[in-house]
Structure formats: C-alpha cells, structure tokens
Length: 610
Ligand code: F6R
Image 1 (cartoon, protein in one colour):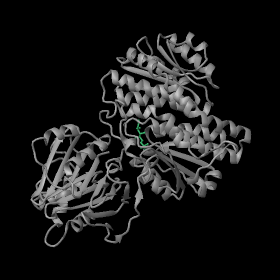
Image 2 (cartoon, rainbow, N blue to C red):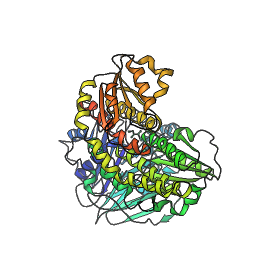
Image 3 (tube, helix red, strand yellow):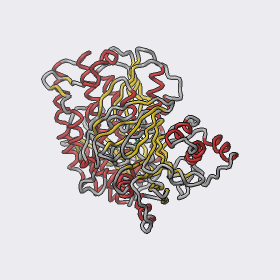
Image 4 (cartoon, helix red, strand yellow):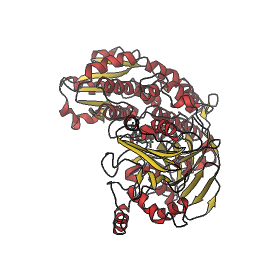
C-alpha cells in the first residue's frame, strides 16, 4: 500500500525513480509524485492518477539532480487529488517527504503546528510530518536529527523518506510498521518499499526494522534507532532476478503468474519432499516442530486469499494430523480477546508478509506467549521476521494485485506441513508415500488444468456481461468457491458470492434465475453425489451451470451447460488444481470487460493499513 522510492548517487535520479515507481505501482495507483534535490534546492512534480500521468506532467520540466524521492499513492486520508499526492513539503519548500502508513495523532499535531504558524495545503495526515521536521531542522540540527526528533512525537505507522534543500546529496528514511529496504550499490544507494525497484541495480540490501532510521549520502550510510542508538545492519542478498518481475511477453502480470504456477508450485516443494519416506522436510520448522506436533489446538490467521488457503489448511490438518484447527480473519483476531495458551500455536499466512492486520494478529499472539509460525512469500518481510519459525513459499514476486500463484503455493506448503506432521502422528508410510507422490505430480496436474485456457476464455466471452455470479463447492472445494468469487469480483467488479453448496437452499437459492451463472466445483470426491443434487436444484430454477469436473466424468455433462475438466488428484490437493480454471475465468471476464486486471480500482497489493 503506497510505494516509496529514493535514490542518492551519481546518476540522474529522475529516470531511476520513475522506473522504480513503475515497479511499485501495484502498491497503489491513485496519484504519484517526485522531488529531486540538487545544489539549487528542491524541484517537484505531482499528478493525480497513474505514473504515466506523472510522466506526462513532468514532460516539459527539467527535474535535474542526482538525489530524489518518489511515491505512488493508495489514498487513506484525503481524496486522490494532485494536492494530496506525495511528496509533501514544509512551509518554505525546503523539506520534501514521502510516506507510507497512517499518522494516528495527525489532527492534534496539525492543530499545534497551525497554532505555531504552519500553513497546510492538503487533507493528508502525511503533510504534518514535513512541517514537524521543519520545526526541528536548521540552527545546527541536521536533517537526520530533525527527522528523529519529529518522529518521537508521532503515533502511527510509517515508512518515510525525506530530502532537504539544506543538505544536498542526503536522504533520511525511517520505518515504523511500513516496510523499507535499502539497496547498497557502488557509490549509490536506493530506498524502496520492497526489493523490486532495487534489483535492477544491486542485490545487496538491508531491511530497516521498526524504530530504525537511516541517513544516506553518496559516500556513507548510517543506521540508528529513533531513540538515538547507532546500530549495524546485516547486509542480505535479494533472492530473485530481474526476469521474475518482468511481464515476460504476457499482457498482464496476472496472466503470467497464473501460467507460471506449475513452476512456482515446483519451487515451493523443491528439496522438501521425501518420496521414499513419504514425508516432507521443512528446515524452517525443524527447531520448533515439537510445539506444532504436540499442540492441543492450531489457530490459523490470515486475510483475503490467504484466509482461503488457511481454510484448506484447516481441512487438511484436521483430517491427517488430527489436531483441532480454527481459522480466523486476522482483522477479527486482533480485536477480540482470543483464548490462547501455551498449548495453542498460531500460524499466520501472508503472501506479502506485510499485511497490517495479520502482523497485528502475530503480535497479539506473541503477546499471549503462543508460538507463532509464518507462511510467507516475501523473504525478509516483517511477518517472516517476527514469527518464531516458518516456511517460505518461494513462489517468486507476485505483482498482479489479485493473488494467484501465492494461493496455490500456500496450499502446497500447507500440504507439506500436513504431510510432515501427519507422518509423525498417524499416517502410515504407504499413505504418506501416496500423498508425497501426488504432490510431486501436482505441477503436471496444474499444467494440464491450464490447457483449459481457450475453453475458459470462450465461456468468459459468453458471460462477461452478467451482473452476478454464484460459486458453489463442498468440503475441500468450498474455499475454492470463495476464492473463485473473490477473484472475479476484485478484477471484474461483478458481484460474486461463494457458498458451501448445501447452504444454497438456506437463502441464496432465491437469487437463481436464467440470468445467474453458477460455477460449481464438482470434482469426483467424497461429496460428488451430493453436489450433483445441488446442481439439480440450480437447474430446476433455470440457473446456468459452469461445472469444474474431473477428467473422464461423463455423467456431469448431463447436468451442466458448460464443463471444464481438470485432472484427478487427491481430494486434499484438488483445490490447487480446481482453482486454475477459476483464476482464468476471472482473468478473461475482466479483460472482456476492459478492466485493468493488474491494478483493479480501489485495491492495492500489500495492505499495510488497518
Ligand atoms: C486477493 C488478494 C488479497 C490478499 C490479502 C492478504 O486476490 O490478493 O485478498 O490475499 O490482502 O494479503 P497477504 O497474503 O499479502 O497478507
């Protein structure tokens, strides 16, 4: 949510910052802005809308200089107008500041600063930061110290980068709750909300932790804490290459990410499956395995798509590991008084590892002294670092705002955890080997499911003007129905609901008429006969059935207008395979409707605000 970039070095900052912003555009695209500092002061440009609009607006301006900051916004306080776009400036336009996060006490600070004579131009919470830094900067207080003093008065979350006309060639950045990465090049430094803008320039990075501040000049970098202790930071290596964040010839990142799932699922399992022993090896859990193995209760917490993966995890763990599992929205968990004891373990699932609600749930669980495990995709992310142990997805950067490959990797990793724990508790070697073998073959099954793309596209063309969709599934496929509906609504803006198929007759059946497409996940599993009855209930009311069925099922075409076949796999793994046509359906419907698939309205990837 909001993307920040900063550059200090010997090259012109403008093209580096614009390219960097484009790589972060998935984090927000309401408005964008840039400030360049040179020996003569600060020059800036802002624009409503996407980064391309910013580029157009600076076409004729000469923003020259080798130090600068830039921002792409997802609005929290104040409409997405040009005046609300970042960077924000102080009264004298000496200080420019970009911010990701929310300043909670901004109203009080704004009144105080207004009383002192500061003049505000925007409706944002961020602008108070520029004025607060202005209060301290000057008269012997350098920018870094001024930022530090200002932040000591602030409540809320921030990742900020600040430039001052009084200190050419210097940037100061700080973090509390919103991620910031520092890229370490040769005589140049980069700052960004994640590694994507940095990786074309250098793979060496440091990750700022909460309460830390960094001062960067062309020659030197100094880290300290907001309470003024000088610290060292470990240099880490970015674990992916530039190609991982390119579109690779696809029209959209989402399509690329859907199509690369056979590979990303393979990557999630690499070195982790032990086929002979019929189990899994998960290095990240090794030291804390006992607390999972002997837990009396597992609570999985997550948001959105990751929450759907968690539901599938619940089914798997209860079936094969026989430990009671509860799944809770992180946003609810953090504000309830959840009952946790030392025998309960918490698993937090997050692609980005930065989702504010999930992070708060992690902190709440730790506060209550529970062991907390993380399942994250982004290496070095806050949740990955704050949990006691965990497993990375290794699915590579997910850039499309709608999560696809992360979901299938989350389910795959949950299956690996289930296999590992299940084998240590009750599953026989033979059963373990069967699961391991099916996992090994899962990438091929997914590749086969992707072959339905042309058929799914034709169905999408037929139904893309519908105003509502219903998705039904049972058992392991119920969360798949939820996920299919979420994908459709977020990128095509069609109202869609997912339901456990049998619940339909308790209400939603009233919605069904000849204009209602009903997507039913009807693969051949333990609930097959029941779901055929549910399909008949829809047909009797003239609903249009799009069935996701198992290859070789001849019966199903008697019940459905359209059948999309997917290959057979174990019931517990079917969500991975059955989700593929639903991702494609959402993608093609959205493209037929002319929607911006990678950057759907009102959304942003990595929801770092509550
Ligand atoms: C939906 C989607 C969101 C995320 C949710 C959690 O396609 O992407 O629902 O799943 O915001 O994000 P993470 O997994 O990063 O915590």
